[in-house]
Each structure stands twice: as C-alpha cells, then as structure tokens.
Amino acid sequence: MAKMIKTSTSAASDKALKAAVERFLKNISFTAQGEIEKAIRAAIASGKLSGHETFTAGVAVSSEKIGLNITIYNKIEL
Image 1 (cartoon, rainbow, N blue to C red):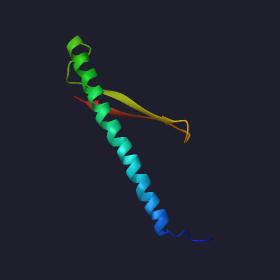
Image 2: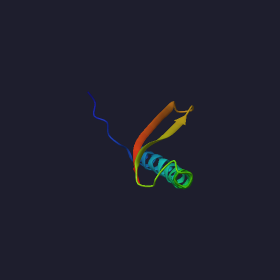
Image 3: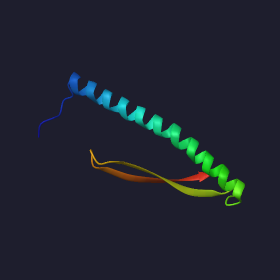
C-alpha cells in the first residue's frame, strides 16, 4: 500500500481548513455563551433553577452542504 506524503500544498490547505473551522467555532462559542448565560439567569430568576445544580445541555451543528448533523451534549455545573 502506498504511503501518503503531505505536500506543501496539502499542508497549506490543512492549515487554512483548521483556521476556517477555528474562526467558525470561536464565533459560535462567543454567541452561544451569551445566550446560555442569559437563559440560565432567566431560569434562576423564575425559580426554574436554584443556581447550584448540574444539568445537561446540547449543541447542534449542521450543514447540508457537507452532510454534517451532530449534537454534542455536556453538563453545565453551576
């Protein structure tokens, strides 16, 4: 079986790909954090949360163009 060798072109495109995904995730992270904080504050104010519990939240990422559709769940510990 042939060994794959990265050329400088593929290394550069890998670097560009990683940079593009990082920019996307940074933007999403900043926006999502603000929305999650707002929702938690509202839930605490309404009595839905006490402010000292742990709960699970999920984030969905999708793109029809590249056939991506994932949901990632994790705990938020207050």
